[in-house]
Length: 456
Ligand code: GDP
Ligand code: GDP
Image (cartoon, rainbow, N blue to C red; front, side, top):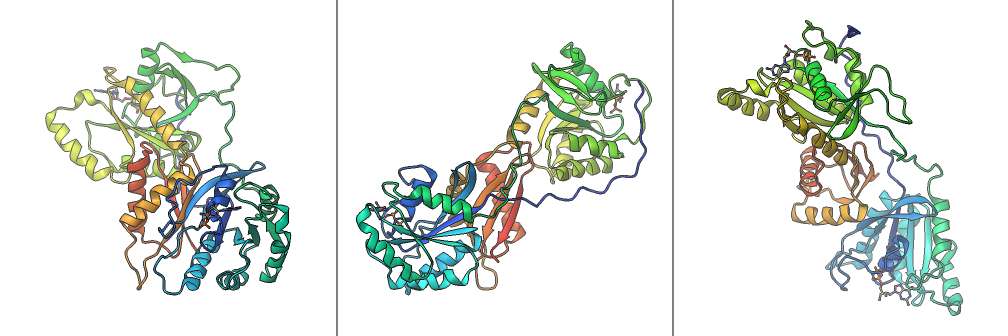
C-alpha cells in the first residue's frame, strides 16, 4: 500500500506540560527535641534518621515519601533550626512559616511531658494565622498516665491534642487517619498506572529522504521478523511490529514506509499533523538525521516538536557510510551548535544502507525508556538537593536569596519535579539544578521538567 500523504500546515507546538499534581504535603513542625524526627521516622516506617542527629547541628528540612492506608503523600521534617539566631522564638516561627506555606496539613508537635512553652505559644500564633489545617500532636505520651498532661494542651487553642508516642508508636495510626481526613479530598490520579502492556511504542521521524523506509526495511531484514501481531494486544494496522535486539517494538504510523524504498518521496511527511500525532502516540521517538547533509531548518522544527512533546529521544545519524574525515569535522561542529536544545538526547551513528550499527538502536531505545520512567525517591532527592544548595546557593535577589524548601518528583513519563521555594527562582538557577540533577541521576535520553512553586 502507498503512503497516504496528508498535506497539512505545521501544527502549533503542543502546550508545555508544566501542570503537575504533586502528592499532598504534610509538614512536621515544633521546637527542638519534641520528637519531630522520631515522628517522621514513625510515619515513613523507618527506625533511625539517616540525617545527622547531633543536638545543635543544623539539620535541613528533608522530605520523604510516605504512604498510609494506600494514600501517598510527602512528609517534610523541619528539623533544621538556625543555630545562632538571636531570637529563637522568632527563628522557630520563621521555620514553621516556611514549612506550612508548602504544606496541605501541618502537624504541630509538642512535648507533653514538658507542656506548652512560650516558644510553642509563639509558633501557634503564626500557625493560627494560616489557613492550613493544623493537628496538635501531644508527643511523648508513652502511656495512659499522661492523660492530664495531654488534656492541658487544649490551652494552646489548636483544638484536640492527639496523644502520640512517636518512640513506641502509640496513637500514631489514629493521628495518620486524621491527617488523611484533613488532606484535600480528591486523591490525585496516579500519572502512570503500570499494568500489562504491549510492545513499547516508537515513532520513527525525519524529513523526507533521510532514510526512514530504508531503516525500517533494514531492521525487518536483519532480524528477519516483522511480526503481524503480539498475543493479547491489538495493533493498529498502520503500525509495524519490528523485532530489534530480541524485543518487539511497535513502530507507530509507519504504513507505507516499509514498501516505499526506491520510490520518489519528496513529500512533507514530517511537517504534517500525522508526524505530530505519531510522536504523541509514542513513548520514545527516533529522529533520523542525514549525516551527509547539514542539519536543516526542517530538522530543527522536528527536534523542537519532539522535545516539547516530552518523549524519550534517540537521534540516529543515518548515512554514516557517506561521512569522511572532512564531513565528520563539520558535523561535530554542527551538532555542538544545532543540538544545544536537547543535549540529553541519545545518539547513534548508523547506516540503513550497509546495516552499520543498527543493532545499537535497541539499547538506546531501552535506555531512553528507563530514563523516561525513572523516579527518584523523595528522601534521596532532598538529601542530594540539600547538599547542592548548601554548596551553591541561589544568588541574592533584592537583598534575599530565594531558598528551595524541598522537592518532590510527582510523576514520570517524562519525569517531572516540583521545587517548593520561598520566592521564584532565576531561570539560570533552575537550569543549573537540572544539569546537576542529570549529572547525579542520569536521565539520558529523556526530557525532564522542573516546575517551581514559590510559597504564596
Ligand atoms: P526533634 O528535635 O524534634 O526532631 O526531636 P527528636 O526526634 O530528635 O527527639 C528528641 C528526643 O526525644 C530523642 O531523644 C527521642 O528519642 C525522644 N523522643 C521522641 N519521641 C519520643 C516519645 O514519644 N517518647 C519518649 N519518651 N521520647 C521520645
Ligand atoms: P525516507 O524518505 O526517509 O523514507 O528515505 P528513504 O528510505 O526512501 O531513503 C532516501 C534515499 O536515501 C534512498 O535513495 C536510500 O537508498 C538512501 N539511503 C537511505 N539510507 C542510507 C544510508 O544509510 N546510506 C546511504 N548512502 N544512502 C541511504
